Length: 82
View 1 (cartoon, rainbow, N blue to C red):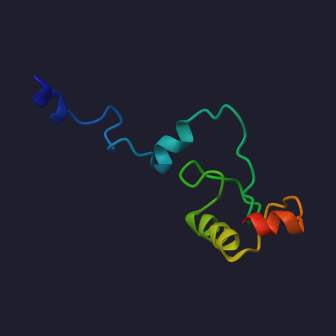
View 2 (view 1 turned 30 degrees about the horizontal axis):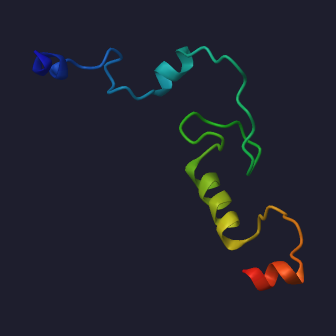
C-alpha cells in the first residue's frame, strides 16, 4: 500500500520545489525583509538573507570575530576561577 503512495509525484509536479512560475503565484503574508548584509529583499531559500553568498559572508564575520556580543567585564576574581 505505501509503495503506491511513494510512486505518486508531488501535487505541484516539481518535487516540492518552488519555481519562478509557482513563486509568482504565492501570496505572501508579509513583505520580504531586507537582507542584513546588503539590503536587498530576502528570499525564502536563504532567509533572512538574499542569497547563500550573503549568508556565508555573515557567518565569516561571526567566526572571524568582527561581530561580538558584549558581555560584562571580568573581574580579577572571575579570571582566577576560570
